[in-house]
Length: 258
Image 1: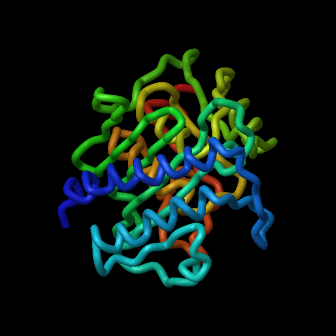
Image 2: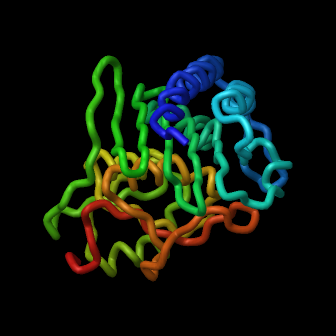
């Protein structure tokens, strides 16, 4: 399987979904609420309607697990499958705070590992692409740059934390590692900021789903970072109901630096 070829095919797809999201954003969208209490908007559904049929054409035969396709959440994970979140950061999308912390996420999982990811933040025009073993890039306008995690000084470590789900466990973890500098941002941008060397670590103890993390995680891993369980064990995909537990996404910062 040519992951570079697939990632290039997904670029315009993510951009088209992002354009549709911004069309809805301009209309001051309202939310409905799903059975689990999470919001869904016209933008989520319109973006998914663009992504899913096109993804079937790009890589026929590979299963797709998507946030807005509830039936897919019951699929047993196959060796290879796509994870799609057509609009990650719906709460940030609805805030209309001009931070642009919402993204289109498309990831390919291979034997539990996110090996390719495309993340597009349409309000910021930041497109991140990562392929394990081939590297990560960011495209903004006509500019393309290679991404690599940075190695911070112990007193210069910057953590990214959820804008909507910051909790006591996160605060305790940051205190344990003596991290005082934090950026609050929504969606999979947290992974991408670490991949771009704009932050160093992302501890997450609240609930997430695999489609929230897969694409950003792939970008981070392709840029030289990693994601682990809090006890440093491997963080894998294809879990029951595609539900994540606690994890830490790492750039160049390591616990020994604390």
